[in-house]
Length: 324
Image (cartoon, rainbow, N blue to C red; front, side, top):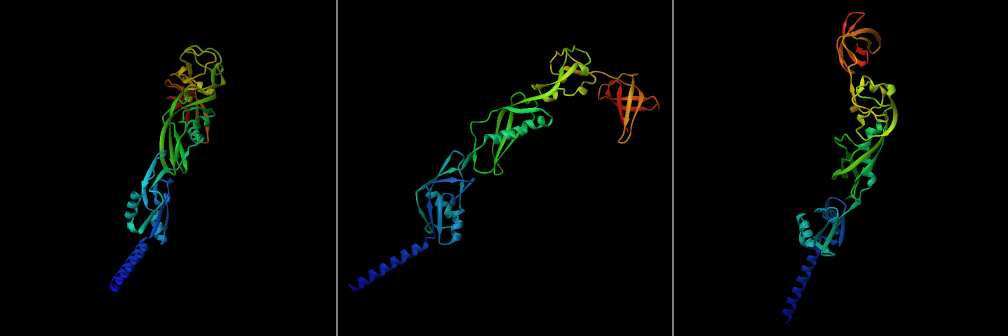
């Protein structure tokens, strides 16, 4: 009887000793949350659970364990204990060293924010209007077809809009938009945009018939809405030098480049005024044209004073320029 009592006592001591040993094996407790919001692309244990450990280094290692990528905006990811346990063991912990608490799985969603439409509009205006406004044109975005809302991850947002090779901004055109969050491109999209612009341009003061030389007194300057590429319009009377109408230009019609053609303003044998200039000196002498030319053409002229032949640029009717 006494022998049996001693055996039972020994077994009880061994069981108690093993229980105490098992308790000592638990190094950390991981208390799962039922729901979590991921703040970054990579999901870590600390984002979905409260981690406590007897050693702070163990706690730090556990919190930093990667659980893969966070779900996309608007999606959800469910993580069960088994998947989390495998990640913990892959980090070097034994299963008996970590105790789980809380629900059996965690539902993870991605932290997000709605992109402010004004942020996109400001970038689009910089891309589409900067050149026009620098030229003195009054312009605004009359159309910008954005989605009802754009959801992006939480973080610092940057928006960059580009017009590309679009020449005519006054009819609907595609505008490329790139959205970055914390320096990484999140989304690219293309939207339709349109510019409305007004500028002072040359307008016919009277009917100008075809093939007639257009003079400064044939035009006036008025503010008009632009409906063609800006470079098609004339804004300075000096641009009329050597120009004739290629068709009838009606009174009140804006003068555009396609309604004009450049005429020959100097012909062989014509007497011309040669304007010679350098950085410090400017001289004017009479000359004789040896070739025909339009405004901007380079022709040969003879200095009637010295007899020298010069290469000169036609700048106006009967006027050429020489740099020396």
